[in-house]
Length: 121
Image (tube, rainbow, N blue to C red):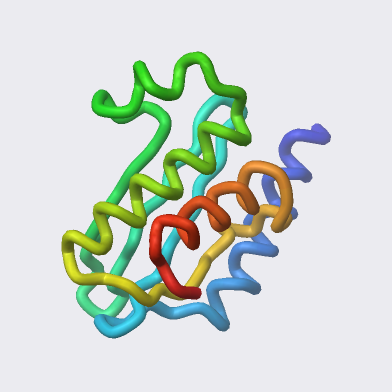
């Protein structure tokens, strides 16, 4: 039962965040999803509903690089990769959507990594 209530609480926090955060073509939304083992990030233009860039710990390109790292270091590396991919598409400014997760640990590491990679938010 605790799992269901934790999930519902995250959904409520996520809805509260999404009321304020909206991606535009000038500043798309950097969306984070965190599971127990992996972290996924997308850059989304909400006006057209298109995912512009995506990266995760399950990407074939990253899997071997991330295997020896702990989860926080993996999240930071994924943040850097998504920033590089975004800059290749011409995206430098984004709005950060933490997805209802607290801003610490892996979510904070991903944000720091994407800032180091050149994204501005």
